[in-house]
Image (cartoon, rainbow, N blue to C red; front, top):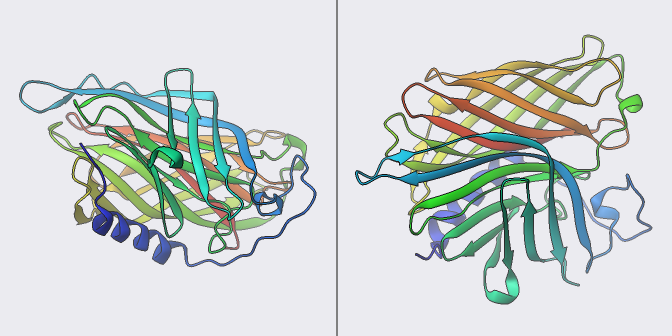
Length: 301
């Protein structure tokens, strides 16, 4: 099975552009632990640890998705390699449950707008490119992947990774608004369809109260097997309240959707002083429905 369906993928990525609407720049300079990704010279490698949500799925004889188990891990990592022109040449993700990789040298990666798309026969991924000059992700990024699209069974997942804010550097007073994106995979209620999703994201942080109001919007879904657009999916827009302990950079909380799915979103602050945040989410029910993915956002974007 091939996923060289540039028209529909282009539409997906154009939507990501319209949601983000941000600008930025890049330069070279000395790299340190919490320097922005944009400060790293082209022809380098970004490797960072992060949090992942992992799934394993298969299709039964009736074409229904079965055996879906979402597993959360904070012991995961991803690597983006760049060439001298600032293009991603390879993507690799490693979790305790599975690993996957894509290489431009094997013709498995192409770029479209803000994202790098990996396609190696039955394995597919979309990762936000943090060095793209049209996005302000300086300290983190995220992606989703799915393996086994032919013969329709295998592990997949989503990851948020980057340069975490030191616990002691998370602000203790004030408010901040974060704007960003989510990407995910969704299995419908009767378990018969697998979708790729994208959406905008708004998070309002109250650092005094240590709480975050979390809301995704303008969610769209695409058939994962054909990457054809299925249009807006407001039933998958999420909302919820997340929280974190004093002196801790990690947050979690309950989220739900309009179609009665419920679950959790969790993540961490990124950057020297919590300039950004990112994480993963997992929701389920009713029926066979399951919705998992990752997100990233930047303050004042």
